[in-house]
Length: 423
Ligand SMILES: Nc1nc2c(ncn2[C@@H]2O[C@H](COP(=O)(O)OP(=O)(O)OP(=O)(O)O)[C@@H](O)[C@H]2O)c(=O)[nH]1
Image 1 (cartoon, rainbow, N blue to C red):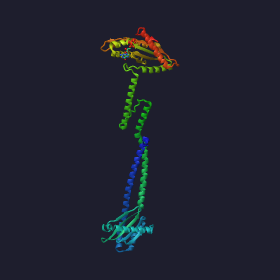
Image 2: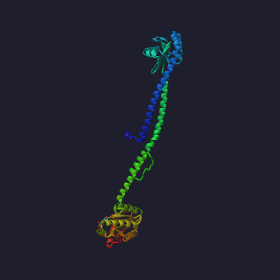
Image 3: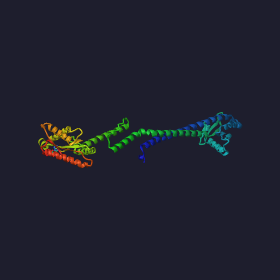
Image 4: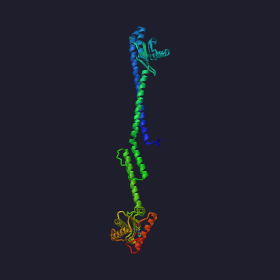
């Protein structure tokens, strides 16, 4: 499933997903540390309040002045979050207390009981170590502090407050945090959609280039992109691969169309070119000439000088043919010591002129046998030209033209060689 998704989509999901995860973790950590800090701060405020009240309470408690104790606790009503403030003597008997008006009797009694239990449980801490006791629950928090007189504990003051203020603060903080995170996430998703192109564009370009090369089989279009990162290496590798395939392609096509000994077009390529040129001639209504030629007494060259010398003669004649033919004529080795020259747009006179130029050039050319002296050879040629009519079947025309030129060439042989005959 995952590998079916596009790379663009995967990258956006990866970038946005990582950002969302990072935001979530950082929000959780910040929320937790804020909760811890705010809880400590709230307890510290309650502790300071308890400390002040216990200071004021000392005389009232020392002189068992219940009325004064009540007066000291009474102002607590201005703070709507204080639920219960209670002063007990050192054995837990209640001297005076303040209860928030909204607190039910049952709730107040339960809290009072909790205070008594805490005094019993934490008596060592309260009376021996002179420490305060703090408690934090979900919906309330409390501080218990010993009241001292003359170095002796004479009672305990407990102040219990709700955690409404703390909870509101934390909730507001989380809301702000959540809004910032959401906003950041939206921005990050937007940026991811934009930034993914930095990574996906080069890959997609490569994929497009690969498809285009595969479809057109045209290996010439290198990407030629200058980059110094890994994508640059990928482009370079792709271009190098294309160049290699192109080179191999050209080598193969040359091998398929060229005669290895002479470097001329081979018979198959010559037939292909003849078909193309003939189709063009037919379309344009123009003539096409062919000259078929064969080296005279070539067997004797082989027999007398050996096969390598015969090869040299073939190569030399090929060069002379190439030089004597017109620039746009195709010269091909048709087989053995037989050659074909295709002259596009040539009338029989023009083809005959080409044949005569070839004949005299070959005749005059002194072939250096490289150590075996020098040699002159001649060629016999058959010339034929025609303008194919629109309803001619090209395959038949090709065959007939080659046959006619070939027959003319044999007539040239029969009539004494070193000449051309028009067929
Ligand atoms: N050295 C060499 N000889 C070849 C090659 N291909 C064909 N031949 C030779 O060409 C000779 C052709 O001889 P023939 O067909 O008898 O014709 P010819 O001796 O040229 O006589 P005419 O054509 O009648 O003038 C044969 O000896 C072949 O072995 C080649 O690639 N290299």
